[in-house]
Length: 433
Ligand code: HEM
Ligand code: HEM
Image 1: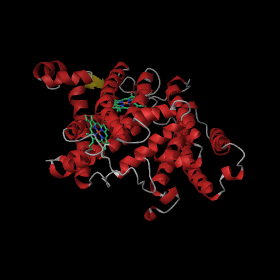
Image 2 (image 1 turned 90 degrees about the vertical axis):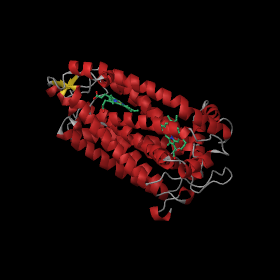
Image 3 (image 1 turned 180 degrees about the horizontal axis):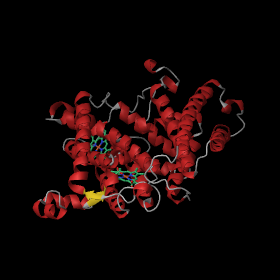
Image 4 (image 1 turned 180 degrees about the vertical axis):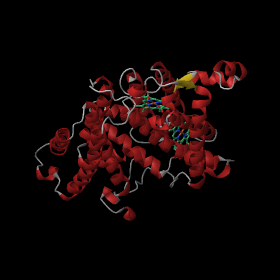
């Protein structure tokens, strides 16, 4: 009988392979595209593409300051399909950050961080960090002006971590400044250590998803019917994979990965910017003391996301994006207000005199660190209280609105950092950069 798992198992050996990843039957409800948007599967496919193209690039890439840049030129100009492999590796890396981040948001908004999926969520956070590290270590490898200075700026930020910051920075870059040892460290991390960790974590992730009984579904559809994985799930995964590969191919054929002039350690471009995913942090550094930006804020966000599954919630927000129309409204208010507040904050911090110069006798950790931090977190608290009074939202909608505030603010900060900061990191219009 077509589609019968037992018959398929005997007739087609590939079906055995699929059974390592999927159960024989899945809940009908989990096939709905608007539940998961296929984002987790896309992230997994992008990692496979990264490993495959990365291994091809590794045949010709030379991890030394003298050879790296020239080897990229050889790969892109002289090798059969070298340019395509390089472009795919570049665009797929960027797409991976986006897709993983969106997948994280989708699991968050559908409440998939709660028991029994808490381990999947916690290890997911680690996966997100590893994906960013994978991108960051790859960023240096082309060894052009862009990559050299972006890595110099980003690694120097580590020094603001008290006691251990300098040690971590020196161990990572292999000395006092970015050079041959850094390239060698980043190359080994990028092509050896990180891919292994990533693959192990992914295997663990898939195992936990299966242990939790598949994807989260709304309470109302708990009794949904079960359907055969083949063809119902496999055909859908196949379509999502084909579309993703097609988009990636078209983008990689049309747009070349950027490559600037060869890295020159004695000439810093102005402005020198961090990689795009750290630009929100670099922008925040203009307004806040480095200790608050590099240590306090990331630590609060990390602790909050790891603690999230253990917060007691009083609703059944499983598998649905927002519980009520009120929750949706709260989300919209939160996004709009956070975006607007961040713009006003950036502009007023540009126009108002620097607190450090007004109160030179007070340590800058207080004037540009603690005081603005207390003002911003106090404003968020007051805003959330008034939102709670205005709209009857429950605890999980309250948490969702806080995340929306953080994401909206980081998005505005990143846009301003990328598009509106010119020479000396001064505010300019995008066409003046
Ligand atoms: C999730 C996995 C990976 C991510 C996110 C990633 C990301 C990146 C990025 C952003 C670059 C810089 C490309 C550019 O801007 O032009 C790069 C370069 C590179 N990566 Fe990866 N990579 C991954 C896996 C791998 C693996 C598994 C290998 C090899 C075993 C590898 C080998 C290389 C090599 C040799 C380069 C330098 C050549 C080039 O820039 O095209 N990568 N990677
Ligand atoms: C390399 C990155 C990742 C890969 C390859 C990956 C892969 C997957 C896949 C294939 C699924 C099932 C299908 C789906 O939900 O789309 C899934 C589910 C899940 N992932 Fe990820 N994931 C990654 C990162 C993350 C991150 C960053 C988080 C959160 C911090 C996360 C948390 C979860 C959770 C909680 C589920 C269960 C969802 C549910 O039961 O509905 N994952 N992941």
